[in-house]
Length: 413
Image 1: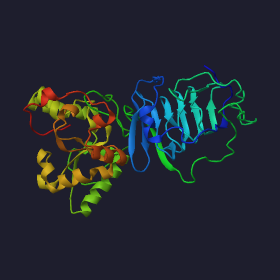
Image 2: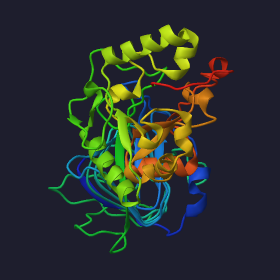
Image 3: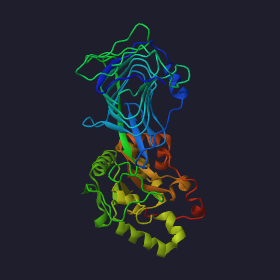
Image 4: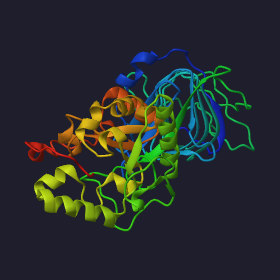
């Protein structure tokens, strides 16, 4: 196959036919591309937020497809580039991706595409007949190939292409010759998109990074014995429970304060019962249930040390005076429980162990146990009626099915 020779840190424009591909069908019809396994086997997602939707893409297993027309994709944290540990496919017209490190290959199927401040470690594949502007990008010399417009395979291409397709910023940039479909020139700081494109924020998330709000803790995903969050703070809401559990991570605590204040305005008085629990405290809690109920039942109503969400500093048990601050299924039928189930997502909390999902979560229904995940994901997850495991695509099959039959009672997860 023919390589297009050139150097890094450049700006290019490829002139072609606008509307080469039909945007609505692009994502479904994309050809397969080589998969790049990350060096780190952790599961990594890219969260895409564009103001109207939130989408999670498991880039450990699949490429990141950018398919929103007229959109600028940029890092959620403006201070650093977003890291994408797989291929990226630009499958929409009038699209820009800005400030990203792409570990895999970059496939450009869309028209009128702008690439800015990218480091592409793999190969850049381009469909002929597309308009592309590329500015301040780091690409290995010669690591650009032409894709066949029909099947997406890289093919040999016109020998007349200039050798300086990618020139460094100190030199001239190659121009399209009369016998090619390709053009490369300096963008000159101009933006090929509309004056005010939609913006989608990209955030790289590792769900087994203990220090993020996205971390998973369950029967299969364990936390280290000696680990605890570095940003624990004392919660500032009404509390009845162990003094050593009166803590949450700072972001979760702030959102909890707002949640309780909003409930108060609606005439609802809530009370926190248990927040952060250390590995040792959770071990004590689990052992107590084991003594009282037996190990088989205890596994459905309490988490073993290392598998409890309370150790993340992101989980909170909530009750009310009407229940004498007890934790039980009847909380779901109280004014407080109903208000919480309806409004918690607005403040970033999800009902972690919903009714009917015991075989997925591994625990019985707990209408009092809420987990902080951030407002965007909490709203989307609640709207979809999904558990955390389902939303992340890591739901085990029937993890608790054998244990839940005939078991009832309260829990201390």
